[in-house]
Picture (cartoon, rainbow, N blue to C red):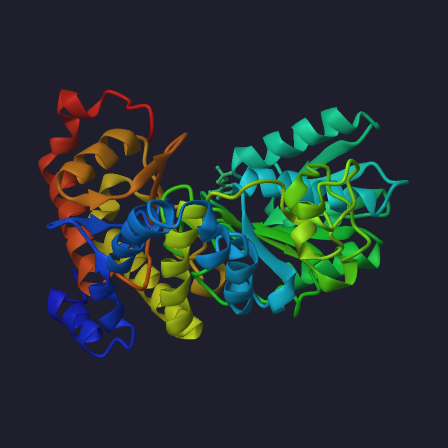
Length: 413
Ligand SMILES: *Cc1c(COP(=O)(O)O)cnc(C)c1O
């Protein structure tokens, strides 16, 4: 028996303080986009911005736009803007390069701070690129470093006096579980280790307090909940107390103390710009600014509140209406322990996700059997939660997911 109705959810939309933001995004007709945790939707203003960058700043301004359109300063300009969203000071953040590349830089910096130690603590089940990047770095360092993999509840105990740094993602990409940034960072510092955090699934989805937690370094995606656009440069944070003391290995001219003196030898900038490497993805940065500007106008506490409510409702409705079809909750049931996504385990997850796509519900599949739904509070309505579950129920009830065309794997799931 269903205790809620579609009308109940429409009522929540009517009083939603964030409701107005949906109009600022382009959403294809008939689509319920529950994948903003992979790639955020396009703000309408981003199309205008892209046109301006290409047709005016690039076409007319040419190289002069480095100065006149502020291209050269964009990584710092946007870093300053995004800083309050992650609890950082304006001079502690830049937007640059891919998350994985930024992770390489900050982990290298963190390990150098503890040159006698050889262990880095990471969560093995994390999004694999984090493991791959650190494995590549350790191979390159060739100093006998090793990753100590631990999972969820065991992370705390894995942090001891052999540890040079921890490198943990705040919200798990598959389960949506939130790690306690304050407690794990405190433990790391207590044993003399540095704390590196990945904010890919938390930045823009919930309040993040890097300085409140005393974090040393952090990275995070801007193309997920911050709606910066496909491949938008990542955010990179280095605590001010490390400025002028840290080193990072990708020492390009953008991180030089005086890039336009063209000196023979590298001299680090000594501030956050030292984390930059080379010429920036300018068009992407420009579009990312639109997503950031929208985010800064929204109340992050309201975003978190709506996110918890939507994911609670989604779990409740899926269990009530689709429970008999073998949907097992993988995400924490307690909303305060969960990011803005919900994962269910189902053995037939892949064909079900494909059938959902055809019904207009965009979510994704994460092997081995996770069906993952992301809820971006700026453009998803409560009624979308209802309609998504309704379409899911229909697919399961009619068994339309069994059609042969849904069984074949695509390259990107
Ligand atoms: C999305 C995500 C990434 C993406 O890294 P790219 O370098 O942008 O491909 C990395 N780590 C985590 C934990 C993620 O969720």
